[in-house]
Image 1 (cartoon, rainbow, N blue to C red):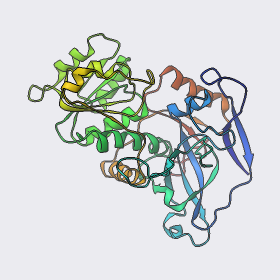
Image 2 (image 1 turned 90 degrees about the vertical axis):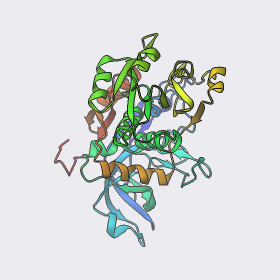
Image 3 (image 1 turned 45 degrees about the vertical axis):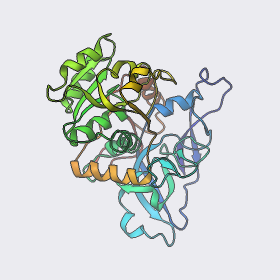
Image 4 (image 1 turned 120 degrees about the horizontal axis):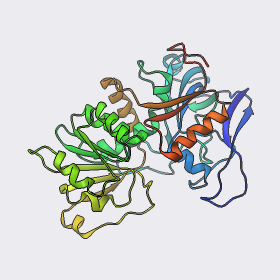
Length: 362
């Protein structure tokens, strides 16, 4: 048998309902030709998972496993699976989306994120899943299961927002990353530091600002301060006293805040709007030729490039907290509470099975 974590449907309006979690039991899946059977070791949460429970996300499934971030060991392969010899017995990362191969502009067709979706039956919150052989990447060997599970979705989202969309992922460029502490923001920080950028951050928590500096941020400001943009301007180097790009996941008044300190032709790369589902676009930003670029997840090619970069630079995804056991619903609820209250610094992970690499026990 295989267990999976799913949502239980109850009555309620979007934004008011909060679907309970439930554990579902199903027969262990059997891979077909071109498919891999993966025994999941760990899965990680995202803000998306919190939105699904409030019915604030499209295409919600009450049957398919939750969570879009996961890693596991390939246990077997279906007949005539080309990669069987190279993948069976290896730890792999699940690709967190379906329907986007390589186009830089956006998905070539219908696109979805795995986990709790009616558009794909794949989700990481399960003991076993079957996936197409081309929908996994070998996990960097030095990572623990929890770290590996913390990488896919936020790593891909952060990589596209910074490297593909900002146009400023270059040594010496000044990059602002808002809302440090969330998984995507931390991935962007780690990528930018590895690329040699001067990286600055915002947060409402002094402790998170200090931890970001430990990870390589040049400085940080509290978005609770009315003059945080002026504070940030004073931190920028004299030789380059402006921002080249902003990677933002909050929205709100970010354009009004940064248009004064962005260079002419500077870029705001936005991958989310946690403050509100709209942003004001101001005429001063037009006069400075500032570009606003939307960025959502990324392609299969970008995922492969991101994983290779992480491996090359020996980056360790930041894990905030790990709970053990897919059936440990009480502590898993605590992870959702961390997201709701914004307490996390890094990813929130469920250890599904023992980490064979480190010998961790459930």
